[in-house]
Image (tube, helix red, strand yellow):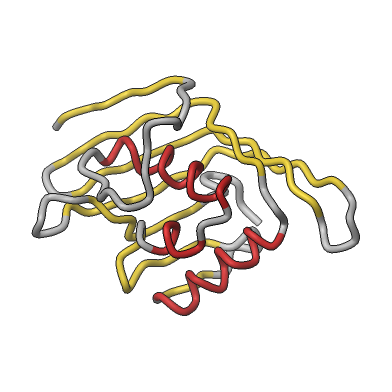
Length: 143
């Protein structure tokens, strides 16, 4: 088992047209695409059968459901920051955890601040890239 740990870093060297070769980079790539408002870039980080956990605890499964989840997030015009990340790799799977903060704007124009510790399960693809299979932005927070 390999452990990759990363603490507070910037996302200035990432591009939307590159595949993720290091599972420890998935969180920073997500944040970069989110901050750019790049829905297609975000969706490209997920396997077609991926599952995303909503704040209520309900699950959204598959490309259309993940796209809808991400579109709702982007509608808030988020400014997301990673505070810390850690990734543990075991063969073809990787478990990422992140502490993130997001400042956004609600539908009524009011400021929103969200913060949590997330958990993401990713899988190595046949081409050596990594994609998310399970994304739980709320980590251990139970509804």
